Image (tube, rainbow, N blue to C red):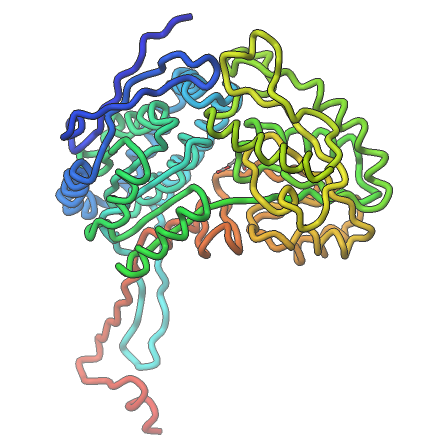
Length: 499
Ligand code: UN1
């Protein structure tokens, strides 16, 4: 099954263009190292052109009626549906996600497109009585301008859709830097929008690397809004630069998501949920389950079965339907993950499975890493505190519910969390006490749906949410309108106090 390498260019206005410098980079499959494509490698000058294109497109797009903007989303959703298999295959080839999960990634964008399309017929403001007679007030939402979007490789279509589709429905125009590890499926997502009638320039793409394209996009005086998914250090620097330039910045960053298992939990359900949460997408999710906090004797009744099932997960080609865990995205990522494992082993942490590069001949061409479980992980240790972004689960014992909550909350991140229990009182207490933007009850830490707010607290985010209704606030400015139809000067705070 040899597919010819792709050739990806930037998209600026209506044209596919090479970099001004002519530079390109290679996109290689993490499964077998084969050449997936060659991609234009952008720089600041390419970003300048793309931002100019987005600025030029703003006048017409921002004054297109929002319901009409929404109709583009509906048409794009239909095209994404029709192209789902083709995009999923490219996604699996370029970044190693299993095809079934890749299809889910694209479905999340389709769901987001339907939501965004219908939001074009809402974009509600408020109507509020005035304190003066024959006067009223209301708010409306105005587009802001050019949005710079920078996204990660692990959800190459879903996560960009969370930013790009609401931003467009709100009337903004965009310059997007897809992740350099997954630009091809991203470009296919964008193509659906253009084919759906999105006018040239409303969405521009500049491919390339963070320090060359991302940095230029962040520092450009004409990107009034920045929306980023990636690491906390990069997000922090975007917030610093954006802060100085008074940009609006939305950040979606790391996680160290816990599952708490109470002794009364349905342990079969826990095992299924933890395997999916920890090893789905080879653990390369912001929402991955990376800590399993067991309360009391749940630990001993759970662990052997969990380890047995983790060992049985089948590593392999993400395009093969029988595969349960695909490769990691790159050699650098595999080395990074293995570094965490080596340091934990050196510290004497009991390794229950995984922890070494696979030896099977069929897996030698790619960046495979087996599901890895460490037991008796110490509170405060590196493995208990740091995001690994790979298939590595840290099991931590807690003596009580209170201690489990303390453990869950003692990391710098706060994206997702979960508790398994049959006791509704305990579940509701956990919901209120867990420091995270998302909490699941009797379900794993991954599984966000497109119509709910998504985002985290502490070092995971800066207070914004994607998904559902939240981004429509973020991507618009509120205008307050006072409408006085009295025909006289009415002074607020003064004339209504005359008695
Ligand atoms: C991410 O990992 O950046 O809930 C997004 C989930 C997915 C989205 C994850 N629906 O895991």
